[in-house]
Image (cartoon, rainbow, N blue to C red; front, side):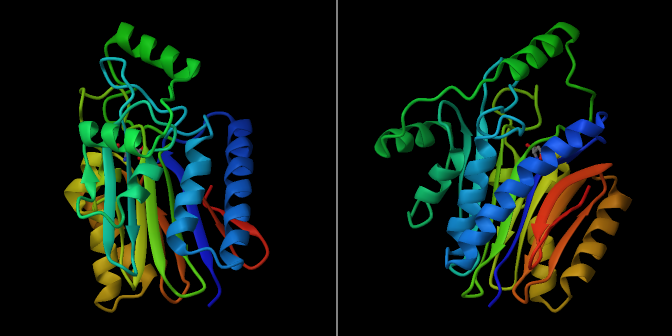
Length: 290
Ligand code: ASP
């Protein structure tokens, strides 16, 4: 089976600076190329999505891991979800602080009887795994928070924060996986929980896999990732499932974007935000959604 990979670096308002688009493209292209090569060499879909998300978490351009946005109290609380479509296991960590790669905690929970941990449990898990304490705060995010604190508003009520990351992979065995990691919506109420660590935002089975980005509350209200995956499972093509789901989201006034794959290797993405930062590989070249 020919492996497939699509990744994203968030959805939101159009990038004001055209230079920014080429910086983001270069960053996504590097990750998608490297992980696709690893998939070709036999890396599993789960390990491929974890690897891609780890790279993206380490890139301060994105709102996940290093470079995560701050909640209202000035703390970073990150969330990450991982789903192994072949095994049908969802695992996640919610609102973790002081780790470099939240997705590695989600991976460590894949075969555990307790697969979704909140702040406290995640903290103990990081200790058990001997992950060194890490401060993901960047100066840029700190300055943004100070500005928001002064004006007392999030970037704009309802505006989408750019930069959540996600990856969806199909491996040589035909197994699918989805992984998503985020710092959240930004300047939200302390302890607010993101869709990225819930099946609504990140879901996969043997037929399809989906990672979402955008307003988490909208994604949760729609049950977006599960809705698309179930539609493919019940016989719609991936493009039909995306079209139908996004049309419903538009009618309901929900703002988000999705990346997806099916077990036949069809690659899909869609959005009802001005921009979705996604990159995917065909045989030889990298394609972009922006
Ligand atoms: N979906 C994320 C959240 O609401 C944010 C994003 O995708 O940018 O936490």
